[in-house]
Structures are given as C-alpha cells and as structure tokens.
Image (cartoon, rainbow, N blue to C red):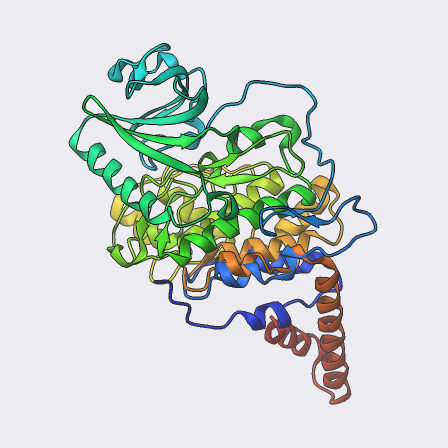
Length: 468
C-alpha cells in the first residue's frame, strides 16, 4: 500500500509566496516531481488541490461538471484542438514498456509489421469465431491490437492478441487478473478503459476492450495540439488523477503511464475525455519487489531506475511528466536509457537519494548525449518558459506547482490522484486568494525583520524558504 510519510496540507497553504495564481501550479508540479518519493504529493492530495477547481469564471462560456459523477471538468467550450473535419476513429493500443519506445508506436498502418506476420492475422481473419478483423491499431512485443467487428452484434471493439510464447502468455494471464480486480470499478466514471472479456483463439489469449479514438500521444503529435491551453490541460489531468485515485483504492500500480497508454475517447469532444489503458505490467502494490523493471524510458520514476522498492507514487511521477508534455509539446526528460534520464533529473531537480550520476557512469563506462528540447536548471523555470512560449499569464506557476508534486522523486511524497483533483490549478479563484495571503504574510515578516535591524537579503531569503 502507498505509505505517505508526511502531510502535504502545508504545501497547499504555505508554499505559495507569489501574488499570481500561476504560483499554485508551479508548486504543484514541484510536489509531483519531488525527488524523494516519500515527499512526493499523493493522488488524494492532488485531487484536493485548488488547481483542479477553477470555479466560475466570467471569461469561460461554460463551467460545469460532466454527467460522469462530477469526475470530468468542463472548463472550455472550444479548446484550440476542436476540429470540424471527420476521420475514422482508431482504438486503444497496448505497449509493453521495455519492448518498444514511444516514438515507435504503430497505428493503423501497422499491417505489414513483423508481429502481424508472426501471428498470421490479416484483414478478414476471424478471431474467436465471430470477431472479424477490420484493421490494425498497434503492435508491440506482446503482439498486436486489432479493430474487430463482432458479427453477432455489429459492434466494433479492440482486440489485443497476445503472442504464443510462455513469457507473454504469463504476462497476459497477470493482466487478466488485474482487469478482473478492476471489474468492480465503473470504467467511465473512473476514466479506465472498459474491458469486456477475454477468449482463446487457437493458442493465443485475446483481450476484448471497448473501441476508443486515438492515443493522447497521437493527439498531441498533431501540430494544432502541441502546447495545449490550460483549459484543455486541466480536465485531462483531472481525469487521469481520478483514474490513479481509483487504482490506488484497489491497491493497483499501473507502472507504465505515458501518452501512448492514455486514450482520447473522442477527439471532437470539447473538452476531450481520456481513459487509462494497457495494464500489461500493472501489479498490486503489495507484490512489488526491489529491482522490478517496469515503465518506459523517459517516464519512469527515479526509484524504479535505481532499483528501489516502489509503490503507487511512481504513477504520479509519470503523470507529472505527462503534464509538462501537454503544456510544452515536448517530453520533459527524453533519453535513450535510464542513465540519460537520471542525468537530466539531477541537472534539473538535484540528486535522488543515495545515487549519483558519476557512480552510474563509473560502473557502466557509459557516456550520454543530451537529447532534450527543453533544458531547465530547475522546475521553477518551466513557468517562465511557458509564459515566453505561449503567453501564459498568472496560471503557469500554479501549473508548475502541480508538475513538481507529480514529479516528486520520493514516491511517498508524490501527489496522489485525489490530491490532484483538489489542486489549486482546478480552482483559480481560491488559488489566487491563497497566494495573496501568502504574499502579505511574507511581506509582513520581511517588514518585521527590517525593523529588527537584521540583514535584509539573507533574512528574506530564509523567510521564503520557510514559507515553501
């Protein structure tokens, strides 16, 4: 189970020392990206963060809660990505974390891939007797994902066809066990892909899922969606945090959260609805063993990369990186391997506990190249970059505060889905009041220090450190 060794309430009420609402998201991002997993904000804390409660705004044509039990925030009627042209929908795809990278994600054109050839499946093939293959949606080391028509009901579904080898079959069985545990959850309300059933086709295990539109990775690859407005980021993060919160309620670690494993239900909806997919390497938190290799390079939490014991907090770290990618249009910590990523983390956030860049380099003789599009000295610089790049005003600091909590290096300190949903990023009005209060507190303390005759610069610096 997720052990949280400190209380984050102080973060949301004492860390914001600037007068702009943007401070709230800056500090939330810091807590999400805390290097020490024991200091990383939890989903429960994130869900209570003002970032996720925008309140009523004169500038918004609509502020409402969706019909899914208030889980999805409607904050904008027409985000920039709303498109008018129609195109054929594609479905959820599953990727095994270590077997192919985000950039190698294969969509509908994957029908010439080696996996498809190996499985001897083509358009028109029948799976399980009455699922006719209409197309191919994705592939990975596990096998392929196909778009199929149920000839009995004329319903379209996504069928994940696993290869027939002992390791993959065992992984498929474990995925079924996880999906069975999730059956008790309302898939729509919890923002988790609907699993219909599984069946055996010859010697292959096939998983039947609802058909969705496209992956979030494909969505943000569209030039129109690179660097999403805050009105789109907020509902996406809210829904994903909601998903993590529900996974945590049943003790499940997703372990491979990334844009390719997040599906857009319908890209033409405003705001879009997203669902978490691919539980191929998900596991109960109680069964984690130190050294377990999970996740995808560039989205793994530090504790996974250094072989430490981990829990649900690794998903919050990954969500923090997804949040930065949504805001900037670029992966925050790209790299060819874990060493590259750890180097970038150390340069930006400092050294993870009990691990050094030099130690890894000495042990492996590995030299890395810098592949980043974004080079920041600290996470606070992300707010300035967003202001310069996209003209964000006031909101960027709040957004970065959320990212910090998602990327907390200590998984025990990483923000939880519940906490994300209550982050100030979702409540600009309340967040602004919090920041104004903090500003006056710091100003008053600075005034008192000045009257006492203390050296002003160091005193103010220490005061601000205390407030944080």
